[in-house]
Image (cartoon, rainbow, N blue to C red; front, side):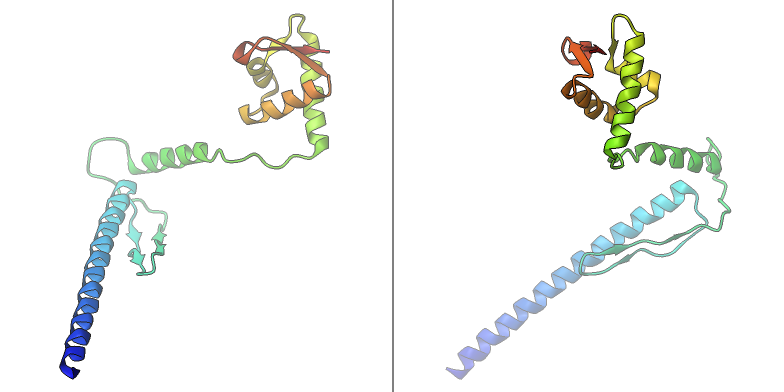
Length: 169
């Protein structure tokens, strides 16, 4: 009876060791993949120095890139490295189109009054995109302002979807 318990215990221990070994191999493979990706990114950006990517087994990733301002010129044909980095920075700035900042009721009323005064000038009314272009507003700002104008009866609308024309009430 004692040997059977020892055999079960040894088998369980071997299973745990083999599971841990498989998990270790998977973590090493993931680390190598992350290092490969980090090397490709460093090469693409032309960075001079970069610290190693540290991957913890609990799943957190920490990457630190160090740029001392000097970009290594690429030997490949094409744009210089500085122009490529500047273009990437400009593209990422455009992508930061998250949520709008919270606006106070006063700010909303002020923007709505600008819309109403603009629409009053147009005899036949204006479409939302024309209002947006004239007042230099973001597309995300328009629905709230137009709904508020319709709700307070400062604006009236005719048509549907993009063909909606807003006029002063």
